[in-house]
Length: 398
Image (cartoon, rainbow, N blue to C red):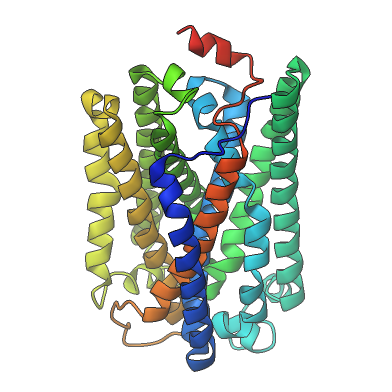
């Protein structure tokens, strides 16, 4: 069995302790906000939580996709994806503030189920505290089980290569991808769309799934390129692999853009009073400039760069594009989550865009803790799956 990465590359080694410190300071500041501005705290926390949750869940989804399809791209990204997926239980613990602060976020939780919402009988049953928490527990149990099984078998493969494990990966990952898609769709409805319970969209869950896979894939590329100078990655990573990764990143960008535009087009063409508030609250008071920024930098700029074959062959260019997409996607999550509170509580006129200090505190607090735990996971695993039979093929350039 190959030894873990006890010595990290300087960029990651230097980031671990500052990440933990930022996480502790940000969390402490957020706790202060809990007592001074509780409603803002819970809204800021939900925004930060939905962004950082996307990394382990998207990592789990892309990891299962890799096990089903195979390919050198997936082999190279497998360890960063496995390390991210292993943090699903951490996110389950960090969900507790949302569970305890439901009445501060969701209109349906502040009163009796469906009170004043003119909700259907089914929605009144669905939007209850007990059922909400039971569904959340089921989601995390499913995601944690899938992450645990894939990690356990991966460690067993490192210790003693066994062809039967490849079949276990495929047999589990196929249904697992379906279960992830359904469960994340329901989770996005529960945790974000129900902030404004009168509004609904059948594409909302798919858009969250696309954003999670894009976000986690971009993170995995960043980690891979930071580790690329250390063996065994330095022995197997070649320019054609970078092109494959760039092409897949381009595909994830296009899928996200397609779903985002499709949802907007459907709402705009239908022009229904129950649906258009979603975009009215996001295209007024300065929010329209953030929407334009996302159109340009979440789609057009990475799209044009990733069309260039030479840009994809250069490690530095691909690293910067992936890192930029991570940051821009955080703004996309902010654009989706934060206006939903005003929309659900029917605050008029539409509040102007602003960044509260709790937004930064919660984002840095959760992010610092998550990053420190993620770097620790990377340190505990070999850089590549040493028991995978494809490793010998890649080393020989096959």
